[in-house]
Image (cartoon, rainbow, N blue to C red; front, side, top):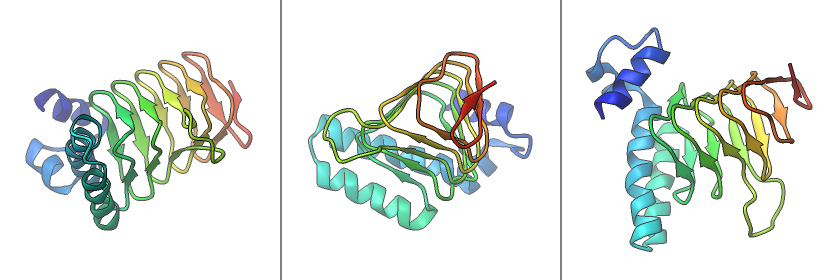
Length: 165
């Protein structure tokens, strides 16, 4: 928990102290409840209960995370309103996601249909990363970019349709 709070302080200059982060950061609350919902959904197979918890989180904080998504350590959802993280999404460690970003699917298939993010990925405000694609480590996705193809590690993606720089 302390490494999580420390990582937020490093990424957000507005974060003054741990109590402020715990009380007032909706992304922190969403991740806290996601961890419980994920345990219920995946480990105990109490799928409806996990979905209900995340429904309440969506209603209160406007952040939608499917309880089956796999999220690594120290995910920071900054100004989280409108963030959507789909069912088969995989997120690595130390990622940052800004408001309005979507990690979504492109169809109705029942297989892996959401993106996989490597470690230390930054997803800008309003960005859309769609489909069963892989975003490499240390990638930056610009605000409002629409990413439909794999992105190599260390790249920056901008635009509609996203292109690497």
